[in-house]
Amino acid sequence: METPLTIAVYMLYGLSGAAVLGLLVLFVLKLRHLAAEKRERVCLEKYQDYFFYIQAYGEEEGRLKPPAGVLTRSEKRIIQKKLISLLERFTGVHRQKLLDLCDDLGLVEMDLKRLNSWWKWSRVDAAYNLGMMHAEQAVPGIIRLMKKDDNDASMFIFARALAKCARKEKDLREMVELLVGYRQNCQPLIVDILSDSQIDTGPLFASLVREEDADLVKVGLIGLTSHVQPGMDSILDQLVNSADKEVRIKVVKLLCRDIRYLTKRNVSLFLSHPDWEIRSVMAKAIGELGLSTYIPLLKRAVKDPHWWVARNSMNSLAQLQVDGFRALCSIMEEERDIRIREMANQVIQKELEKGRFPTIDLEQQITHQQKLLFYQEWSRKTLSTAHALEK
Image (spheres, rainbow, N blue to C red):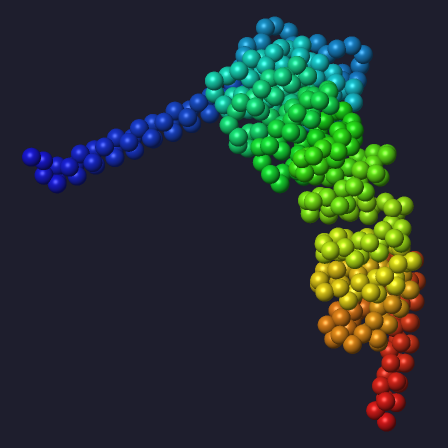
C-alpha cells in the first residue's frame, strides 16, 4: 500500500517532468524562431538588389521580371511578405505591376492550395495573402470557407480578403448576407470591409435598402452615407415608417444630410416624431446646415421633455448666427421653466467664450462681436426692467 509520502513524491516527479517538457518545447520554439529570422535575413540580403529593381522600375513599360534562378518555397514566402508590404505603399501602375509579379512568381497559386489546408490558421493566412494580392480566382474558395469554417473572428478576415478579390457585385452581396447571418450589430464593420473593394459598391447599397431583412437594410443605409445614389427618395420615404426603430433613425440621419429634403413639412414632422432620437437628429441638423428659417420650430423644440432634443435645439440656435443667438436670449427672458433657462444660459455662455480663442477666422470674429454686443445690450435692458419692477 502506497503511503501519502510516496504519492507526493510521484506527483513531484510528474510535475518536474511536465516542467522540463514545457521548457524543452519553449526551447525548440525559440530555436525555430531564430532559424526563421536567420533565413529571412539571409533571403532579404540575397535579393536586396532585386527589391531595389522592382521599386525603381515599377513605372516602366512591361511586366517586372522575376528573380533569376529557382525559388524555394521558403524564399517565396519571404519575398511574398516583402511584396505585400510594398503593395501597401504603392498605388496605380506600380501597384498593378507588383500584383502581376505575385502571379508570375506563383505566389497566388501557392496560397490557393493553402486554402485547402487541414490547419485552420494556414487557411486564414492564405486568405489574407490572397486578399492583399487581389486574386480574383480565390473568390470561390474564400466563399466556401466562409460557409464551412467555424463562426469566429476569422469570418471577418475571410470577408475582407473577399472584398479585395471580388470583381462582381453578386459575390459581395453573398459575403454581406453571410456576415449578417453570422453576427448581429456588425453593420458598420461590414460597410468598412466593403470599402476595400475595387468595384463601385454604391449600387449594392442601393439594392440592400430594398431588402426585407432589416439588418441588410441597415448595411445599405450606412453605406449610402458615403455612396450617394440617385432615385432613392421614394424608398427612403417608405423606410421612415419602418417597424425597426434603428432603421427609422438611420434613414432620418441620411435624409438630414440633404438640404433639399428638409422642407417645412418634413422638419415639423421629424421634430414632433414619437422617437426622441429622430427629434434630436433633426434639431441637430438644422444648426449644422444653417437653416435659420426654422428658428421658430427650434424655439418650440427646446421645451421637449427629452434632454438631448432640448440640448441639440439650443446648440443649433447658437449656430444660427445672430438671429439664433437672439432666440436663445429671448428664451431666457420668456421661459418660466428654470431647467430650460439654465440650459439656455449655459449655451449662451459657452457661445460667448468661443470669441476668446484667437484661432477663429475673421467672419467668425465679426459674428461673435455682434453676439457680444447684442448680449450686453440685452443684459442691460433686462437689469433695468428688473430694477423698475422692484421699485
